[in-house]
Amino acid sequence: MQERGEIADLVERLDGLRTRLDDSRVFLDLSVEAGGDPDSDHEAERLTEEVEAALEELERLRMLSGPHDNSNAIVTIKPGAGGTESQDWASMLYRMYLRYCDRKDWHVDVMDYQAGDEAGLTKAEIVVTGPWVFGLLKAESGVHRLVRISPFDSNKRRHTSFAAVTVVPEVDDDIDIEVKESDLRVDTYRASGAGGQHVNRTDSAVRLTHLPTGVVVACQAERSQHKNRATAMKLLKSKLYEAELRRREADAAESHAAQSAVNFGSQIRSYVLHPYKQIKDLRTGVTVGNVDAVLDGDLDRFVEAFLLQEGDGELIEDIE
Image (cartoon, rainbow, N blue to C red; front, top):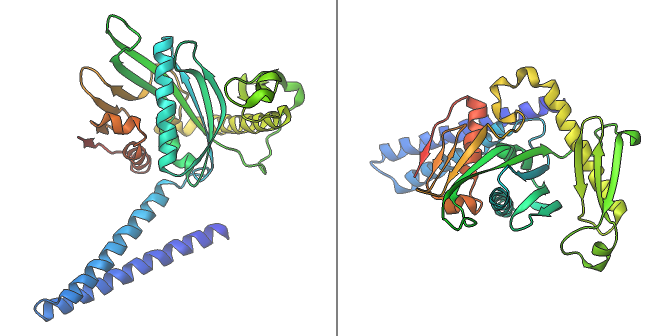
């Protein structure tokens, strides 16, 4: 009945668009018969613009039709091999996603942040809350490659760095994922960073290791160890749920390469800052010259191209 209701709503919306287009044609005919009528022309233009806006909204809903696209998302960022250089690149990606979330008015909770010894980070994990979060952010899951003159190299040589981004949907509380206590290793430790004396002087941070799968999650966002454990358990269930989904869909995953396991030999996007400035998505072919805007969170063109490619199978676009 729910599916029937959704289809009926879609048919009703399409019928409404057809009616508006018919009305627009009537106004144009009236204008032609009158030898030109500004009021009729304006009304026809208004109706046509309304139809275009409504079609764009329907196209967005078509692209975001996955079972979890309207779920919140858990985003994890890890640097690849390369020490400080890759850790700094991971922190640049972390900042980029925070800016992107801010543009979308999404709420971000930092579940885990481990700073690098000299610069950057060794791991960051955030939970992003808002409408269609997973449906949009899933386009970012994969390996990101950076080419630049390293600020950590006194000889000013060009370096290539990698960082992995994984995005999984947050599991709702009503989804039953069984996690046995005997399958868990629980470690507590003192949280790092800001948070006050209580956070820094007590073992409030919690790390859960799921022994059968090797999945590790951590949370240090709350002052209470109990709250951190509850949040970490929710993160763990989400990751186990996503792993089970991937296992079941493995046979059909050949046409969805972006959903395959992340490894540092299959980057999805290349960011070049030297000798020229350009960012290219290797899945869709979208190329952007305004590197600063992208690193400041302007990801819409990459995300939309990925979603269109998922729906249509092909999209190549060059953007200066």
